[in-house]
Length: 298
Length: 298
View 1 (cartoon, each protein chain N blue to C red):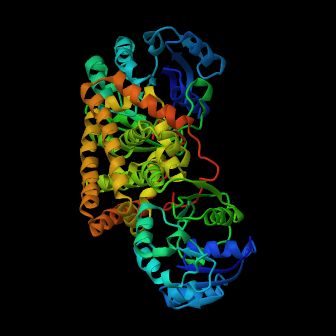
View 2 (cartoon, chains in turn red, blue; view 1 turned 135 degrees about the horizontal axis):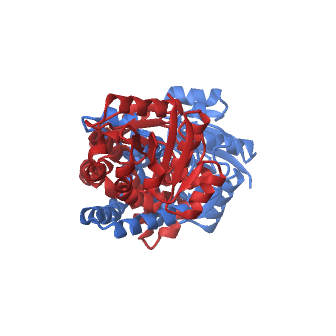
């Protein structure tokens, strides 16, 4: 596989790392880049992440056979709209968003006959620090990338998407967008919400300073993800709210079981509930490919 | 400070480590030990954790100037009752339980005029493995121990308790039993319950295998404490249920705020909620003395 031209829409950590990885793997000849910030565009050129800075999305995607959309969720819709008329019919377009149904909806509303170019992607990678300065070619190595192809995608587009991520060291899985969003609501988005809520519940109490002073490593690990970036997580929770609220129903049912056992003084039921959780969690191990070093993208 | 005789009631990880630490610090001359299990008693002698195995609590505490009660919560009441008539008037008696109000209640109901001997203690230390085999003299080093003294304690008893833990390397804090139980309900017991409930909520769904397969390091850290020992945590949650249920009310209020913001599509409110949590958690650091390597005692 050899590509002539990559267009990078959004020159941050995720996009910049993708560009560096493709260049290092020798997959692309030329990289154009767009960022809404002129400073970021210039920095991306200085750091040799992109070859050419463009002042519009339309200009950047001109002639590109691969387009990576790596902008905040809020800028997806306008970016799709801005590129539609300049996208080559055979170009492969991918995003890197943590939620999929909402991005697909934006693509459907804007891309018209170019919808088939878009293969939605979620690379489960990141860092605690954002920005082009922290981009690195190895960000996606040994990480998992989930593709949620559309019925409109050609087999060629899907295979190409698979090949690109595989070439830069990522383990590729395919899911439906619905399964993707339900899965990450359960194992990532709701746990983030719970960690946020736990910290807020403590902070709301008069004795919060004493409480936090006594907190140990259990609290440290449980609440680590509560330190995540507010703007990123506002967007993720909001974009996936239907699934997050669905998971909340399951969680509240599980909480009720504990609360009922405590209120009834039913220690047998209490032990059974803990035994189930402890058994499932003890048997669980992190799958190779799911590891990452971020608080915001897992 | 020099003690003649330590009586160890319960020869497990916590008690065994205390005995080893006191012996290593040269604080005691002779250690008697009681365990309900004959095998454990023998093993404690073989491992030189105790000098003399006793077949009853009453026999073990005879002539002891220091008694450590390190039995499961369920055996506290009967142990207090069994030692009362043989406890020396000047002896210092301490426990190592994770909850305090319930232990104090048991002491009040059983110890009679010896109640003043009992200085309730909670050393925040432990390991993921239990049993005398894993006991080590350094378990309490650089850990925090919380004392919740009673009005019946003499200053001498309190000072002695403080001195014993300090001598074996622990950082000693004093709190009321109520503040202790509220604090640990907030920063340890409720987080454990939430981790258990989150795992159970996932396990209850048909797609749980897919969900767990995709879970990343955020889930790993958030749910680590869900693997804790079921019998230990049944006892802790049950013993501290009033405070745990009180914390649950705060948590449910915090969850409602998130749910309402999501339902209303109020992204500003959502961001503010996350910002608060992220700010508090980012500013928090684990206090020296609170560190420990256990899933069950923090």
